[in-house]
Image (cartoon, rainbow, N blue to C red):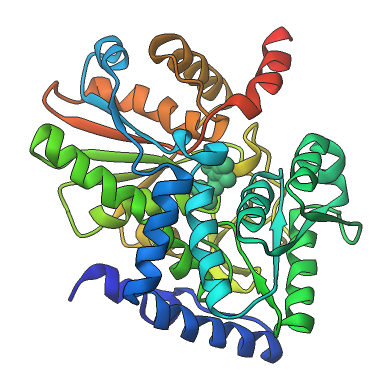
Length: 389
Ligand SMILES: *Cc1c(COP(=O)(O)O)cnc(C)c1O
């Protein structure tokens, strides 16, 4: 049996995944799962998905050979998968386009989403503008203050941003509000989730739409090098860019799959099995068994849980997960900018930072693909402030 198929049976990945939600929400999600299963293999649906990826997102994006980094690091050949070149500047739009097309097929009039730092909210608002859908973004009130420019971006794109003041007024509370909205308005509303997390069918659905990343990179590396890479590296927050970058290599045992986390949000490295936001995964808990506050300089990686499939890939030993420090990330951010003329997102710089350690341990005829999940324009001001200190 194909490992990819075995993994996605009924939303379980080994012991991880599933759907731990109240009965009324379970019903809504079961219906969503049935609709997703119906359309994911539908020829017209897939043609439409590919059409928008090409004409709107700008795919396929390149697999760029990084000559300078390869020379400097003096080991494996370095290739960069350029999700930073997508419209809106990151991989998130791939999933947003897929889910919004499903929402249209399901007859939804409203799209709702959660957002932490605002990146998923902006990607969702962007696609809603183009597809002429009403768009409501739930965002912790605390986060709306810290990311006021992203709030303005979403409003500019025609979305309504709802600040959530409950609880700690952060991402978790925004997710709860979005789920409440969904339970009440499920007949007209589609909840567009931003990462490979949450109850079934979201992790499976998000992987499906993000798999385009490794579908392309595999074809591209075979064209350029005539062989598979030796390692694929990606940063892990919820895990969507990493699962997309890994998907088409999971059944290729010669390819090492390496997820990179911040050392201050080491979910896969130090987490234990637990239930968070309606699904089972590795999760960071404090002494009282509550989700532990995490801290990362990259807002997109700041989450105490992680996708269930990554939890399984870790437990089964198929993928490896490592951590890097903020200092290493800042150095990688500057090194890629200076040597290749590419300013990466701080999230993506995590993968670059680990590649810098791995490459010199490998031979010159070996190959590393780094998934460059996004561009760093959004982070330049933050890095400027950090380097001043
Ligand atoms: C949101 C984001 C991430 C983290 O999310 P994943 O679901 O783990 O991919 C990583 N990189 C960028 C550029 C992001 O915007």
